[in-house]
Length: 536
Image (cartoon, rainbow, N blue to C red; front, side, top):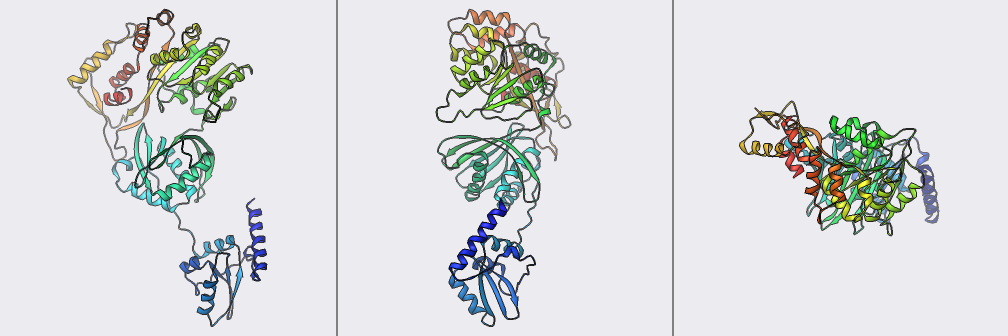
């Protein structure tokens, strides 16, 4: 295709030369090109838009383009009056090829960003910002994604401010400044992102998109880009968040979710059944999608038909039929529900709905879970109990609700202490009081941890890891439909609250995310501050 485009450009240039009664030279037919540095400097070559092509004794042929002015050609003829000067029309592509010989592009060294630099190296932001000005526009996207992957970042945040555009990576749940761009350069990057993600860079509304492609950088490296885009116009420009996804299917497994033996037993008992509704709840960035895909990938086998309905399809897995849904398109408000009804006619064993957002989708999912299908979905709620209350508000009093719900998993991600750096200390009175308060609320069926001689840990520091954390762990509460919970839902008080449901589940052995977090603190895996930063 590129060769065809070049051929067409040369043909058009030849026709224009004929119209102008000028000599035409096809530079693609000049394999042995010589550089004549004695006539014009590199700056003059750029400004005049002409190239000395051949020199024979006192005859010089300059190649000029459609944009070379007559005045410039006249000045060159007068300047080199001792020579016989001729001008030949060449294509813009031919001129660019020659300029790569006269003025080869500077070799850009793609500096790797280190996690320690984001905290201790004040010059890092300046160096990365300077490099982003020098590299090719389409390399900016590939470079940022590559560096984010190297740092195990979950998101890239691009934020338009009044005087500049700020770049930050979210690493272990915390944002770190990486670089800045001026607004002109950012418009170029935004154009690359918009084109790759099939969105508009000038839309006045918030948009969602997805980029899944391989980008080749100037140094020959190929970067696999798989991100979900979220854009929103602000007073200073468009803000962009890119959520990174891991393309390795083997990474999504229940064995890698960090489930405790009790949590794994609950999940296994539920997903082994042929029907029911499983919800994974939590805010954006709490790992809901990873949990969902790990369950699906574990269930993925030759004996099962699995279909997903997603907006957008974030991970692509072999053996699973995945259906994209654009819920932002005009008239597509109920597209999840309509697609779900269509999917059920395909006789699936397992269905995953990306997110339950409305009454119609909720009701359809409940009906599907009662007719021989295992239905999995995500839901935005602060806790498992709050999710059930919200679901009941959405669908109203529905007898199917209690029978359909099998498991609700509420989760958060907290940073894990670096075992090589953490510093042991005695807890304060306030900390001990808080820990005793939470532990005293443990269900009777759950053994309480021994708090005698309790030691807590703080995050240490090192030049390699100034933050003292390494990776994240999950705080997960698993709300099962036990007899106590079922009785409360079937015979609810006039106003059913999340606290009442949580208390009922606790009687039957459920530990809340706060209680799971305290256990992680007691085990020395994280800090109290980190738990309450995330759990609230």
